[in-house]
Amino acid sequence: MSADATTPEGMHVVPSAFPPAETVDRLEAILRERHFRVFARIDQAQEARQVGLTLRPTILLLFGDPQSGTALMQASTTAALDLPLRIVAWQDAAQHAWVTYDDPAYLGRRHHLPDDLVARISGIHALVHAAAAE
Image (tube, rainbow, N blue to C red; front, side):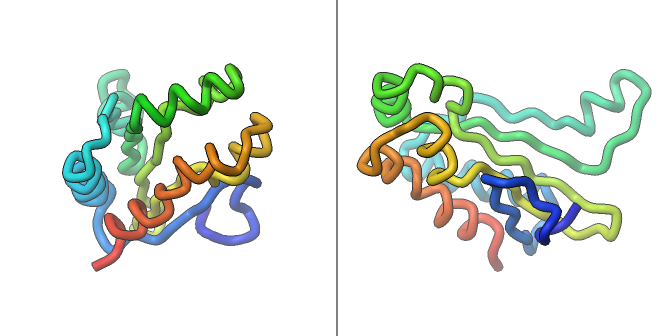
């Protein structure tokens, strides 16, 4: 998959100038600098190797701001399905690196969240682009 018409609805796919691990390292540093909480970093390729399977570099990062996340869940309990926020940094068969994440507006529609609450998570666009750009 690449960033084209095959991208599932409600997702953004952004090219990264860095390999997946470095992209996630960069994003983690940005998040910590801005006082976000990093809840988990899961190296899916490493997990695959542990059971004798192969997977191209694929790293999942779960992060957020509990104050903002709680406000979203108070407005719509089902928002807990999509929180904390997450990105996946991955490498395609052509060795290109990508970052995929859910579109905050899509999450807002999915959970019937008011615009002012969706705005609290809309900063993900800038965070991802900052981590992925040279």
